[in-house]
Picture 1 (cartoon, rainbow, N blue to C red):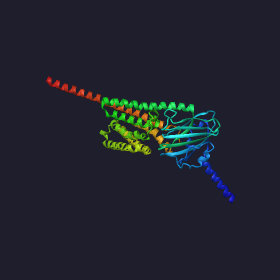
Picture 2: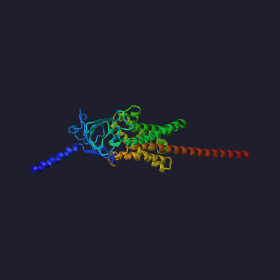
Picture 3: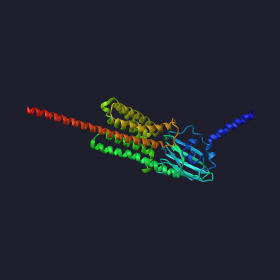
Picture 4: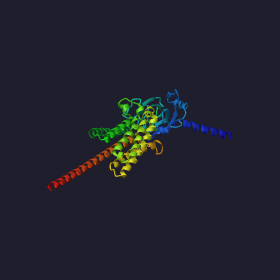
Length: 409
């Protein structure tokens, strides 16, 4: 009986030790999308804890730290540890964190042969690849490595994706994603400037509010594609949610004018304006506390989206044709962002998609379809003016004929 008790105790201890030590990640070509952040060991950080000195000291080092009870979402510092073995013939790879914006990600790759590769990426440092986090690494075939990574930031908005990709394939991915990103931002900037110029000529506030909406979403998304820090050297978490917090107000002002809500639904107009003002009132807190800004922007943009869809369907039912493009625009923006939110919450299964890029594409499609809605409204207004002129000319002709008849009598 005593032997059985000792055996069970040793078995339980071995299971605990196995859980607290990194398991080997055997890398093959079909594992480019496997998220190390899900498969590796995550450890809580302590004060004065630095990286292990050598490959052999990693096991002893991680015994000093406790397992992270849950994945960090709202700031702090924690460690990721995993053992790597490259089972491919390639040697050049990229350690690629994405679906995130963080201050600094520092990694050390320890080889069994004794070499150490030090890697740093993030918003506070100069990055190797344009508008992407990531570092080049070398993994010799069938050689054992320990990867130890420190994630440090005042915020972790979304679950981090942390993968290893062959360098040649990653460079092609960077080119493709950057082209898509430039196209999306180009849509926003060009349409925003175009509508601003039209406003100066026509004084129609629909164009002004469209331009302001475009500025807000371009500014908001630019921080999540590392444009401000990589192009201008400006990395400020306090600005991350400024654009998103102002987007509901500018969008509401836009669709009030586009859908002519003041004339048809004054109560909905007032309710929409109240929501927009409430969203804007959260700007100071969103700038002071980026983690709060993430929650605030999620709530107010989601509320504005639901209200906008309701208003759009309402105006369609009333026969206002430009509302068709408006509803399509909102659906184009809602679906990608809904997929991202449900994936981050764990409702949908994990995906290797770049959810930020998916959200940007949805927003650019939204802007494009809203431009069609503005053009359709302009077409209807032009037709109304033509019809008004025809009626006016007809009345003038009738009046002229009446006067001529009177004169002939």
